[in-house]
Amino acid sequence: MTRHLLDITDLERDELELVLDLARRPVEALNQPLAASGVALLFEKPSNRTRHSMEMAVVQLGGHPVYTRGEEVGIDSREPAEDVMRIMEGYHAMVAARVFSHSVVVRMAAVASVPVVNMLSDRSHPLQALADLLTMTREFGSMHERVVTWVGDYNNVARSLGEACALLGSELRFACPDGYGPDPAEVERLTALGAARVLSERDPTAMVRGAHAVHTDTWVSMGQESDSEKRRRVFADYTVDASLMGVGAADAIFMHCLPAYRGYEVTAEVIDGPRSRVIAQGHDRMHAARGLLAFLAGVR
Ligand code: CP
Ligand code: NVA
Image (cartoon, rainbow, N blue to C red; front, top):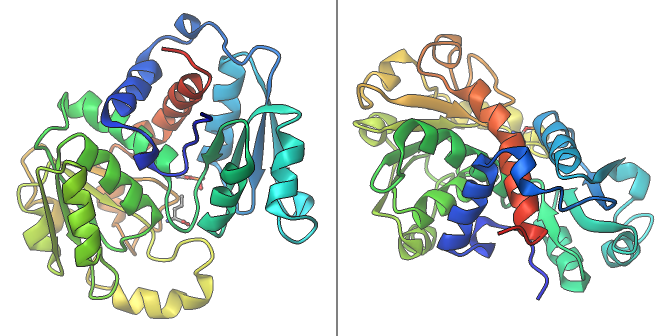
């Protein structure tokens, strides 16, 4: 069966551990499983980290990345996603896509005979969650019963992070305004995945108290720009600042997938301060991508 990574839950817990293990191995130990192969990288949205980390991961595995912007391929405008996929699998060992609608990567995977990788959709951002685990496990060792707090919008990045940390047995806490957090069914789903505990409340101080890692993201994700004024009002009390970090564990770290908007979801003092791990986290994107692609290429 062809394996895909559309969501973190496409991996079993032991497979997630294996991907992280592959990501930590030296490049040379992976033996270039993509030698003489192409990997298509399709982007319907802008990117810095995802494009560069995926291109370099493909190169480190011996393959050749082919980057294309969405408007050039025209998924569902120039031709249906299924036709795009059926053609690309004739050229490439894997196809990765950053899309507006998650249903597009689902439809591509449904007809694909090569792995499809979700490089961010409106639903999830699994490559980011893999990198986040690399950064946090370097810091904490095991994720088991570590307290991971998400402040702000329960968005694509939050959902994938929640799934990843749940699979590894962390305690998850979400501090989100009404209507922007995980609903009870989602809390139950994350609990069933293996989280030590899942809490969701409006109050950021209550959710950050004692936390080991505090994560946030932009209040306005790509595709939500027309809503930005309203969102800035809704999230106004959800800025991660020094006083909020101060109620976390004594050695609590701050994380953000980037790009960040200083003065909105996080203050400059926090993101540019000693607790911030955002640059290491960004660099971990390449190692995570390499581990995932090696896994999909069959390296064990
Ligand atoms: N974190 C992340 O996905 O960054 P880019 O949008 O720059 O790829
Ligand atoms: N939630 C953000 C993440 C950017 C990497 C977005 O979807 O725009």
